[in-house]
Image (cartoon, rainbow, N blue to C red):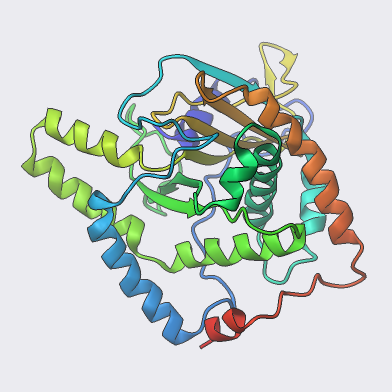
Length: 325
């Protein structure tokens, strides 16, 4: 199952609520993708829709990300040696404070923007990172999109996680130095993904291929397609209250994944805090070196954002104007 179903199983093992007996025992699944507000006009929405269909059909022939400090050279060979690290936790309330300063931004926009800044800081530090940032190399992440029925009250039913998952794809915007501009750029990219039918079309094609190909051929095809991106990204909501297991207070939750990609980035929230789990191929480096930038980039983003008395102004450009069309 995906992170949503795994967290649900974990919560079923937890003790009954001690501090707030009326709080819901289970964590709600992530909210469905909402239509973005005001980022794109009707003509651009139509363009995004058609582009998403074409991109889904052409995805099998797409090239993988360029090799770099975060991407292994041979994407066909998965490393069996992985290293794991966890970032420091940051206050969810402070992330919400940041969100309120950006027009129509969501909490997910802010968390992904912070992750983008963390990756950028890491690349500026490691060997070959600066050259990679100056090149046309790209860092993309695949991420699961929960497409289960809205009517389902729980993920697990009859012993099955009822997997119904599409994959989205995000290219991290690593150019530029402004943290506030990075937030708006990430928001624009995520809004575009919400409008694109690419994940749903790919899911339909995958199901069709499963009926036509042998299990071995389908597995090889899907593994190759899944390794096109540098990273696998997930955002898993844990309980937003203190949980107990066997009478003991759960201090923290960590979420990791052995991904076929060289890099896994797992955002997880628990009890008013947010952190990120990092699982990295042994050949790529030390995940602790990446994790250490999470807290410092958050503090820098918070300071840069809160300098503005009102809303952080959106960058003015011809692209922003054309997007409204």
